[in-house]
Length: 380
Ligand code: SF4
Ligand code: SF4
Image 1 (spheres, rainbow, N blue to C red):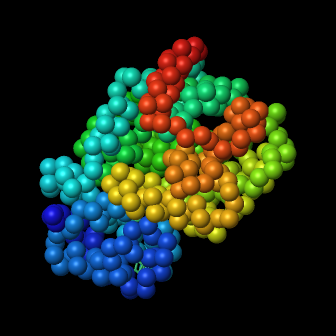
Image 2 (cartoon, protein in one colour):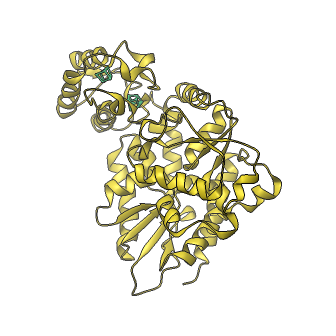
């Protein structure tokens, strides 16, 4: 069933429609446009004319920003579809029933519960204050890796604490801004009460969300930090003995952050890993298939994009620095590994299996609980 949206969204939609020439350059690598239209111009004109939209259209945009990256007119479809999501939620008393939101709701409610969150641990008083924010996907993958990363940061960076929490991106992506604000205010309150000046993030979605919503905190990616302080001594050159080539997949939320792309390459060079650039990389990277929560809202489309992305390289292994992207590459059917595995996962070097195993949902939640307990035991 088509639904209404507000005037402000209509105005934003019209502005992008007017800029679009219908050249279709953006369509080749967009996860969703081919399925829903002949061209963005035609799609936006129809939505404008009807003043109504089928919710599956905005809820299928992966928010990857590829269209704007390649568009000669700098049309921002991501902005239009996100605004449509927000307006639909606002005007229809929540996310329409036709859109699967149950899993997101459960994930977010649990993620912000006491069972899976901590205050900031490990800080000393009266010094410049930083916090390491590993994010939920990495914590769900491996509490051990999170703790090893934090212990390394503690040795190299003065006065750094750690906080286990979610940044609320899934709720933001669904366009449910009231709920997002409620969740994010708890994160901000934790930063404020501990006088945090700098947040070190491991997840590219957290990087984006915290940068946008915490103007008084400096946000720095873990990759910039590690490139600056150096990799662990025992890992320098360790990659040269690995008999595999790793294609690098850059996550789309930080497509514009060339300093992050450079830092990641610097780390892989220090490791002496045999890496290969994908055709679409850095600022031109493509969605892994889970952007914009399409893995929940449009599973079929998401899986298609995951398969497409992994098959854009002939290499059998894909390396990324976002755990969500690693999960997508696995679902797409290739062996995938996180950059942190090469830095702190000694078990991987021992077994000589340079890829992540699949983990079921129950294990992921139990890992998140383990991480919470471990973090709460940290002393200053
Ligand atoms: S590349 Fe830009 S101008 Fe061309 S169809 Fe896509 S949005 Fe329109
Ligand atoms: S943001 Fe990504 S998924 Fe959305 S329209 Fe642009 S290219 Fe397509």
